[in-house]
Amino acid sequence: MSSTRETIQLAAIELFHRKGYFATSISDIALACDIQKSGLYYYFASKEELLFRILETTMTDLMRSLQDSLQAVSGVEARMRAAVRSHVGFHLNRQKENFIANSELRGLNPEHLEAIVAMRDAYEKTFQVLIRQGSEEGVFAPGDIKILSYAILTLCTSGAFWFKPSGRLSVGAIAAIYERFIISGLKDGDMNQGSPGGNHPRGDAPASLP
Amino acid sequence: MSSTRETIQLAAIELFHRKGYFATSISDIALACDIQKSGLYYYFASKEELLFRILETTMTDLMRSLQDSLQAVSGVEARMRAAVRSHVGFHLNRQKENFIANSELRGLNPEHLEAIVAMRDAYEKTFQVLIRQGSEEGVFAPGDIKILSYAILTLCTSGAFWFKPSGRLSVGAIAAIYERFIISGLKDGDMNQGSPGGNHPRGDAPASLP
DNA sequence: GTCTATAGAGTGATAGAC
DNA sequence: GTCTATCACTCTATAGAC
Image 1 (cartoon, rainbow over the protein chains, first blue to last red):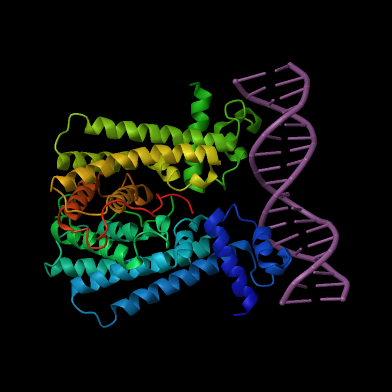
Image 2: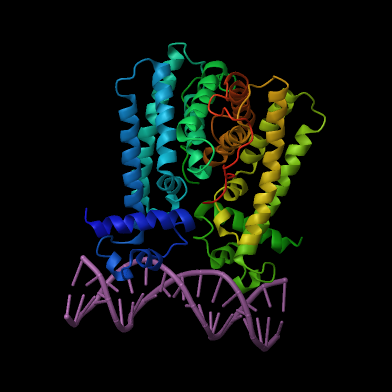
């Protein structure tokens, strides 16, 4: 990847995070890179493709981070704890990209949206498998697997919306807070109350767009 | 409030929810109302003011819903349970407005943004007071009050992003799931691990914009 | 690879008639 | 209150020189 291409992508992440995708113009990005706006089209076919490449990179790295964290960890509770720490850590360490990935899906065209949603679904699946396994082993209370997975991921993702690296708590400290909260909820909250029919949601949408 | 004004506001809620604030044009809204776009300016000074009125209405009603739910409920655990049910119920019953309120703050000018953030802060305060009280009474484990309040609210708010009224679970069933998960986390997760210095965050931002 | 110049479409908002 | 007409501007994207 050429250096100019990287410069453009980094400037776009910065601006999409600060102003939002729709409020950021190609001119803004070009200005931040000290090039002319037409020069940008040598690297990206459109503003939408630039957004897609950012999200694609983020999702790929997110998935790899999870897999690395789970590799060599055994036992369902330990694996869930590792997964939560990985998710929180990634979202706080790469806050801007993750903020964009969770707020600018609207900017994607249908094909690209489908691709990103597929990556996100695969990622969520890892958590859903862990919840199901823990529930079957009796480590976690029985509950609605999809709702629980949305709850866990949303909770941890939200850190990317308020976290300040210069703040009082470190990434590890915040991850520890979420880890304990989630494990308590999984173990002690009898989640089956609201869902007598079983664990396979039928009508629920993934956490997507309207 | 005149009927046309209401029609415009409802059409805007529908469109802002479906397409997003920036992707919705004044023409789109006017078309949906069967008026000319210039006619819209008789009721709202700008597109931005229209967004603000929607959010203002939503926040006012959200606050009132919480106060109504807490009125006449005593005991800190029962009050927290009632607050969670109120929050979840409001977000699922008025899904579109709440979706907008949580994703389109960028469209507001600085003065309007400040007003909405102030309303949201007052709302969050109610939850923070409950957490502190429960912690002091020993009903909840000690923990970081701001982080916990963000966690609770984010968790329950997220329902507005995936909930489908035609889905498998009713609003009450989903509220019950969240209620149990949250109370378990508050009671059993020793949240003080990550925060040895006390319960008064210093550098944390509210869950706002970058 | 990067530039200058510009096409082409759409936007929010206003003026003024009725 | 609602209309027609239009302003003034910005935006994404492309053409073509160097």
